[in-house]
Image 1 (cartoon, rainbow, N blue to C red):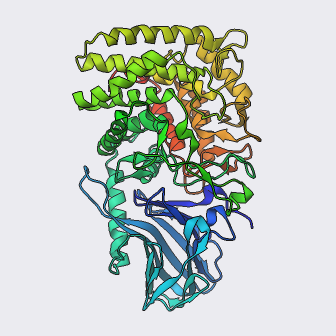
Image 2: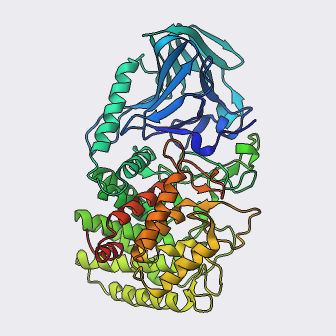
Image 3: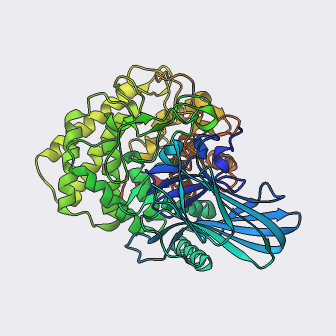
Length: 599
């Protein structure tokens, strides 16, 4: 069966879990009881056996759709031959104090209003346990049902029937009538709620949050929408931010590059923290920073953790055919076991930015962080697996060396701000300066005229575009200008679309353009003083957004979305690019900010 385009799905969130709604109105992804739980609705990964929640209006196979402004509430308009219906889909939330997580009703709401004429509505609920492995049994009547051995419960006042694990509601509705299906995923079924009030509360919650943003500069609407997506990817119980709410959406259709992204990657840390604070969402920034530092009590930092601060073993689900036949489908992520020294740079960069913006980093928090600066002072010369998680031997990746420099540099700066004059700080200075000199000597290949992927190689790596974005070199340094040009010449697979690298990574097949790198090209061009070129690239990248303004991890050369979706990294880099374009007229200030010269 034909799979819907990845970026055609709508994204709903209550900051505890997420749902993806296909263009035809089917909910095809929902994990319970949280983002990392069992996908009881998983047709996204198997058109035959994955569970789904279908909603159809006879005579209208596909509605027009939009998000209500400032929200993650989806509005779909069904124009049928004999009538028009409006459907509002959302995961219900309630306004709260800014310092507190969003209260959630643990309800997926599908509210239907007939605007004119008559429509024939058909709703079918078919969850399956174990990522589609097993059908459910339904218990209940009088509009209240429970899926046995799951936390799912359903309330709907339409006529119902059950057959072969499918709960069906169908009726003909006339103008002025409103009905709703409430799919709860809490352990205790909630009392039937007023869907109109749930809609009002959820809209008010998202509108209130969006209105807190103080940003009105370049690309403001796009930036605010991306910020809402990031808010939706937050797990409010802990403050974690997942990379994406999905697993195993392929980086190559039919290929094996299918990974579970329902995890927190530390490489997102500084970008996320800066985005939240610069857009006026300080409380979410604090919550994330506290989660991040809570992980620093461990002796070594894992590149990624689960939403509760732990990891699970990677395994395959052979009963699922995968999106468009892309196998294997994986849950868990083996990359958690890799050594990625760039992780330390991202964490310390986030901590310095946080303290510069708030002055709130405590001595206790610093005592946890400084141990990891010591680790990098001791181990910066070792190879690692790199930021792209290549599943092969450790190597001396240039981006890693740059980020170990960042770790040491930010550690020194924090020590100065916090009055830490211990002898180890001088050792950090020596290591920092040594790393910097080595990267310039061994990470830049004069013969090919660019920074390269690893020492002794001539292969390119788009991650080195971050060199000026973290203040390692000025953006207009001739070596960076040459690197930008070579990356565009050799890694661009379509207008403004950059691959991460072309080197052999030990896996069969290839991947698409990595949108994080494409947006980071914009920021690098701004810092290089090539503002017009940066505007052109950014404008082109906006054209690649899905119909609801969402981005996956990657794009094929023909614009086909690839990889997990929606992708936090992409939306973070979009925000960073827009903010840099907004400040492009003051490059000195941008360079100072990139090197964390202060707020």
